[in-house]
Length: 152
Image 1: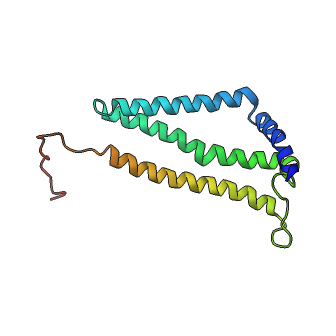
Image 2: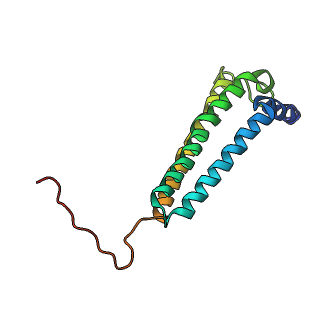
Image 3: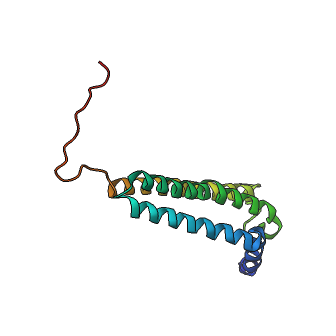
């Protein structure tokens, strides 16, 4: 257990190097800023410019999806593979005999799968919440237009 805690500073140093230091941090912070700006614009422009609001919301959702379904799981797998000497046996067991001789790979892939599963669930919950919170209805006194009835 002591080896685990002694390895934590080394793991964070390796993660910093993996992120490509300031450039990686800049990309991450820049993406977060764009997500906040797009989301804020979507909320602010919703009542007056519906289509612009929808486009800004879709742009924010696309950035979030790229990060949670692509960048983060992929980066985790690359990081876990590149730092196997550091992580293996100290932070993540290499094997659990006799059950799993390849436990390191199983754990690496399970973390990516769990992150994607949580992100998928959060996306569904967020979509349902947004649909309920910002439902489109007719304005007060406005009547529904005539229905065409389809092809005749």
